[in-house]
Each structure stands twice: as C-alpha cells, then as structure tokens.
Amino acid sequence: MINHVLPLSGRRIIVAGVENDIGDFIADAIGLGGGLSIGPANTLDEALALLLENPIGPDAAVVSLGLGSHATLMFADELIKRNVRFILLSAPGFAVPAVLIDCDVLDAPFDARGLTYRLSEVLAKRRGCIWSPPRVPDRL
Image: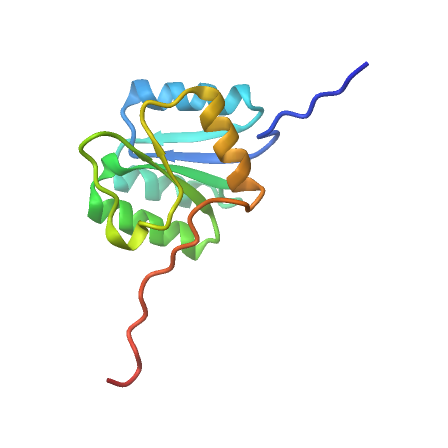
C-alpha cells in the first residue's frame, strides 16, 4: 500500500481579500491539498479578526491585492509580526505595492494545482514574502 502525503497536510492557511466565489475556490484547493482554510475574509477588518480568533495562528496566508494597497500593507505587516509567510494574489489592474515587490505573487488566472504547489513552497520556506517594513533611523 502506498501512503501519499498531501502537500498541505494539516496546515492552516488564512485567505484574505478575495470575493466569496474565489474564496470558495481557494478554500477547496487548500482542502484538496490536505490543508485547512481559515476564512475567506473580504475586508481588512475581517482578516485581522481571523488572526485574533485563531490564537494558534495560521501556517501561511493567501492575500489578494483586492484588499487595496493600504489594507494589503497593513495585513502584510500583521502577518510578518507573527512570522507568517504569505503569497499575494494579483489580477489584471492590480499593482503590487513597491514595498512588497519582492514578495511571491501568483497571477490570475491560476488553477488549484498551481496554488497548492505555491503554498507548499511557501510552507517549506523556499518561497513567500519575508518583507519587513522600512525602519526609520534613530538619528537623522
């Protein structure tokens, strides 16, 4: 008997900034990969609430640029404070904020296999955003 290990087995992944139908697709993809989807959250407030409601915390996150530049930066900062790696979802018409330009971006359209693979890479710490906000020097 062959025992297959699913790429996201047992991992908790927060989904933020997506519309319900896309959120359902992402949740299904995460589930098929063996993971547990937290969310989706449509707004920054919902996304932050998901972080606070889950004290164990997510293992990774999928963050859509659909949250808006400011909200995406605020949520990214919260994830980074908690050492949660994440990928950004982009679509035509959404620009990646300059400070997140080095983050891993998954462009739409994407399929479940591509998303699952990308998340497994993030969880293996081979990919994902490790951005940190610019620091203001103590002295000018």
